[in-house]
Amino acid sequence: KILKEVAEKYQFKIQFHEFDFASCNFYAKHGKMLPDNWKEKIGSHDAIFFGAVGMPDQVPDHVSLWGSLLKFRRDFDQYINLRPVKLMPGVPCPLINKKPGDIDMLIVRENTEGEYSSVGGRMYQGTDREIAIQETIMSKKGIDRVQKFAFELAKNTKRKKLTSATKSNGISITMPFWDERFEENKKNYPDVKTDQYHIDILAARFVLTPEWFDVIVASNLFGDILSDLGPACTGTIGIAPSANINPEKKFPSLFEPVHGSAPDIAGKGIANPIGQIWSGAMMLDYLGEKEAANSIITSIEKTLSDKKSRTKDLNGDSNTSQCAETVLNNLT
Image 1 (cartoon, rainbow, N blue to C red):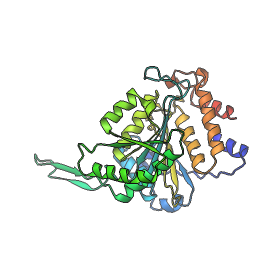
Image 2 (image 1 turned 180 degrees about the vertical axis):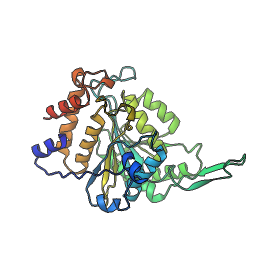
Image 3 (image 1 turned 135 degrees about the vertical axis):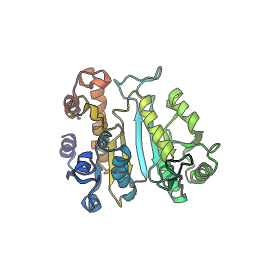
Image 4 (image 1 turned 30 degrees about the vertical axis):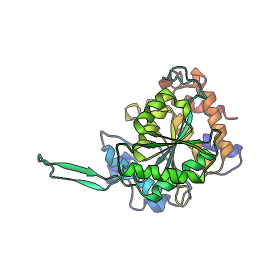
């Protein structure tokens, strides 16, 4: 409803095609998360608007994840995972003396290689010699393109600042390579201020001084951790959005909320819809409809400011539908 409303207001067309795969219900029927021709079905679309996937009591999480979302990211070369972290009005912050405006950052995560590779294996299972090996894969191309994307973002923010997450004092081969490429790539962006933190102290700084940060670039694992920690510092992961982007637009990009599927509350009308709605705003921004995207974010902020329109997880009075309807009604 919200996407259709802003499309009409800002005079652009948006077509929706719904598919039942990449779901645990599809897996229950077919024994796999995706049909054989899934690329042909969705590959020509501009964007994928994705809900959370997962039902661990029926499908193991590694099956649902590797069988759907990770396939989209890798086969569609969605090498950028972008997650905004913003303290919203009306959301209680667990950090002392922080108010809306104090926490406002963008986390850029490498999304297709790094620590989450499938290179490795297990041997001698069931014996006292059992071993497991999983390799980290970092390529010059992979590092450069995610760092350059982050530099381009930082170049266009008010503070023009980029922070690199590393751990080269402990991970002595791949992370020094990451650091070397960061030093080389920053030469092309003299107007962007840069700094670098080891991941452990960076996590501490997220909690102690989140206002320091503007844009952060990180490897797959470090970005995954930071992009959950960041929203937690704003009071909730439940409203956080994310984008899995192929910047060249050769393939569709995917937009999804950060929160999980929460099957324990399915059908109860208490889930917070803001993460999904905010992800839709990110999708419109990516598609070039910035004014429409900004109107949704403004409406989200207005909705969260009123206890009556927040959901119960944020100490509000609304159910899922009522909260979403308020966002719709608050559109400017």
